[in-house]
Image 1: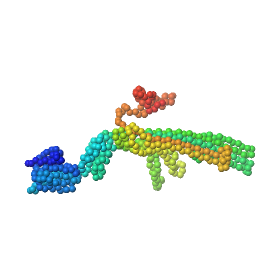
Image 2: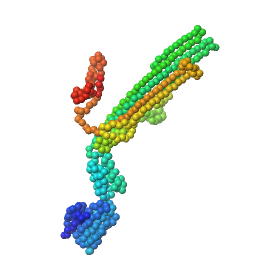
Image 3: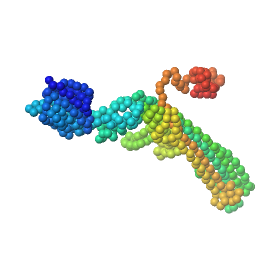
Length: 469
């Protein structure tokens, strides 16, 4: 029995007597005509093999994968050309098999591993080649780091499908997202007009003049004041006047603060509101008319998909919306009032975008500043143009509206806590009994967070809780 050694770049490599992979810096005995031995080498690299006997020829069935060259009777060099597997058979002068090798050539990953170490120094990513594919293993901090490692690996292979991502995300952060939708609306309505009716009995059979105040912008509003004046003469002439004046100032404040918590990279949605029916189809048969309806949601909605890019840095894909039913834009189906169907409209404030912010940071993602002013003057032709007195034959309708809207988003990386530290609006709530409700008009007997005194000692000043009276 002779000894065989396999050398790669001056180092000895294993040659096991059974089908096994050759390892560096080891030595083993090989018998002439032993079973095939496995040699793995990266594409574009070479391996020198010392033979146990003098060789005359080397046969490689698939020269596209590897090439074997006989440098001397006792040494051959194997060169990996392309990913794949092939065999190599070494023959002596008598045509007997000296050595049988199985050659596996895969894509080289040394350059890829060096690149990953430079561009991602903090990540524990390992690249392993299988034929012409690359397997990425190890642990990363976030899905963003895993995606960056995959992008680097795709530059070293022929196609993106050749990269197999088997990396593990180290832990899974949870993110709480808070969206604040604040809207303030100010409106002002002013109306002034004169209703007049005069009859001159001395002119012909009677001359009648009638004027009605019209308000084309806001329409006739309930409320306001009316000043009436009536006068009559002995010949039957009469004068009836009504001075109508109306003024309204309105203020609306809308505040919605939806909050939602989800895991890193997972989508989540929150809706507090309801659904209203909308007809989407109609079918007429012998039994009558069938209307198909579909329910549409409305209310406060928040949909998010947060991704932690790095420690404390969050990429946030979100869509937030505040909608409410309104008569503006509504339409009616059906002819008669009893059988008609009124479909309400929706007043919507919506924002959808992608932002990046640190944990605990806030960002104003949308805003609106709007001012509407409408004014209309109706008058009786000719008489309305008279100086001073012409004001009696004119009616004025004025409408002004101002809207300010901002949407602010906040994101926090959070972790679970003990149940005792959680608070709810029902903590400390006690419903008043009948005597307290009837005699003192109380609805609740006590409302405050349990342990409020402890919180005050910790730095709070005054009563604390969800409801402060």
